[in-house]
Amino acid sequence: MSGAALRIRGLAAGCLSGIDLDVAAGSIVCVCGPSGAGKSTLLKAVAGLQPPVHGEVWLGERDLLGVPVYARGLGYVDQDLHLFPHLSLLDNVRLGLRRLHLGRRQEHEAAAHWLQRVGLGALLARRPVQVSGGERQRAALARALAGRPALLLLDEPFSDLDLDTGNSVRDLLLTLQRELGLATLLVTHQAEDRARLADRVLWLRDGRLREDAPPQSGSAGSATASMTSSGSIDTHTAVPAAGGRGASTQPVA
Ligand SMILES: Nc1ncnc2c1ncn2[C@@H]1O[C@H](COP(=O)(O)OP(=O)(O)OP(=O)(O)O)[C@@H](O)[C@H]1O
Image (cartoon, rainbow, N blue to C red; front, side, top):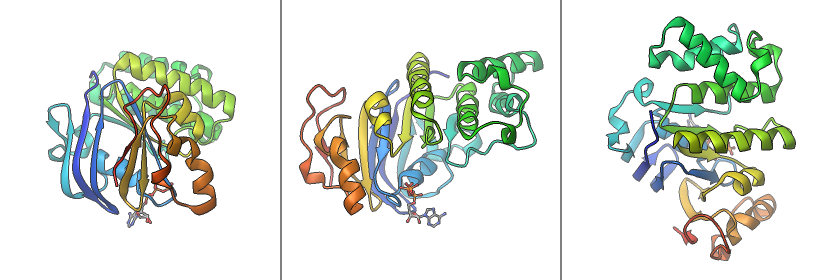
């Protein structure tokens, strides 16, 4: 499936309220904010795991809220990864391919291909418990991409990777998601993700979208320090980006 734009209007779900958001096909939007802000809840609401009480979620022309979770065609890597412990990495990725209805041999080759692309070609037969945390994260990313999703939802996917491995996987993600034209929502606390991946950065706090900014804007660039000290973001310090890739900074609350 080729990518499609994600459009969210007036979404209220769990702790979230009044969320309006667009993610263009081929772009990566980082979702940031303090712990408990509602970042994971946003991804779960799009994936269909957190029922909305209000609002609309569209992927291209499809009204996602009317589509069962298993049929939404999303690639979703959450913090728990959900790799089956009794299956090899290869078989875990094969599960991500099921909805494409490939033949057995094709399915095997495609799963091996995706594991190779994330640098795990030598570990196909290992079970999740037999690989490192970072390798598990890469296997989960391979499984998400293997199903040819139109939309990628990633919840802190690089948190277990050292800087060098993380950056090589970030480069790979950038290449793949551009290649596939995916819209990507990426929950992250890491400055490297904002700097290397983001077309735009959303800042959530207390379940509301406080700011929609280019990656190098004043608030995005300084928020790690202000969040560490105060646990909240000062949205009033935002300034338009110099040379950022996205639109100018938009305080939204
Ligand atoms: N299943 C649930 N039932 C009730 N409340 C929940 C549930 N899941 C999350 N919450 C609450 O919703 C709020 C937002 O949680 P969420 O996991 O979205 O935060 P987050 O921004 O992703 O935080 P973190 O950075 O710590 O992962 C929190 O107050 C949390 O306690």
